[in-house]
Image (cartoon, rainbow, N blue to C red; front, side):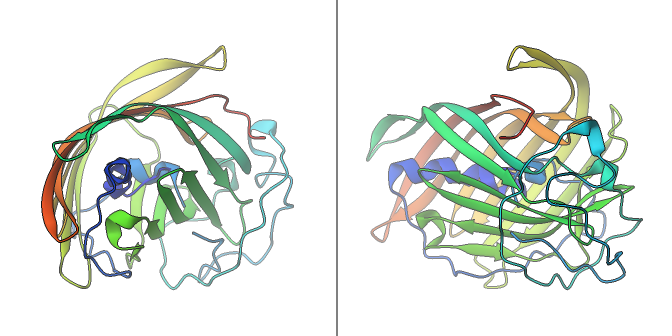
Amino acid sequence: MRTQIALVALLPLLATGCSSGSSTSARAEIDASASPSTAATSRVASPAAVPGAPTTTPSSGSVGAGARGITSSAPTVPARPITTVAPGKVDAAKATAPGKYTLDVSGFVSSPGFGKQDAKGTQTLTFSALRNGGQHSNVHGDQGDTDQDLLVRDRGTYLAALKLTSPAFNGGKEFRPSPAALLVPEPAKVGTAWVWGATSTDGKTKAKATNRVARNESVTVGGRKVPCVVITTHLQVSGDVTYDAQLTTWYSPSYHLPVKDHTVGNGTASFNGAPITFKTDISTLMRSVTPA
């Protein structure tokens, strides 16, 4: 979800009008020790034809095997083959219910050149139906889009592709880890810790995320208390864009959704060829765990 790799946390800087000179395509190189990356559990790029996955396709109105009993009309998304694989077996019960979710955004982005800007607004998070063991998700906001391809397995959710479309990355940047990178383990036990790293193929952007399942906590979503695991992430980005942030994500194992997150960070980016500094303090909260 905004999913997602934690690089999606850079999107708030778009409110400053920043633009970096990075390329439009990149491939993630995941460390050998890499496991789950939590922020990506919220955002995805097209349903997958996963090598070795079953060829049966659940109906567009349900998440395989009737997971959680939630039905919804799934969005139409273009098919695109996925060339990476993930360990474990396809598990439809761990898919996210397809449809559109709405998130309320609050906080601010500030920089010396642009001042402090209110980040209040909304985002939409859209999931496709599970298809051949994969789901596509898209997070859309005023400042850009984040797309992901997710592989749903009994051992957890894996990232096959991540695409960021925004002026901050000179239009877009794409990551395709191979093999797929684990985003959220199953089960997500308190105390579990992991680190992942990624480098763009142009060599201009490097990222490192140190993650930990910190505690269990409930979040009220649409008047309903939703049990969550709280995952903390220290994100460090270097290169054409620099960013150091602390992310906290409230992830619902039952709904397979990041229902709330909070990101506080600071960094530098290029604007009209000149570096500027910026700070972010952004929170999101899902309005309902039931998709539209």
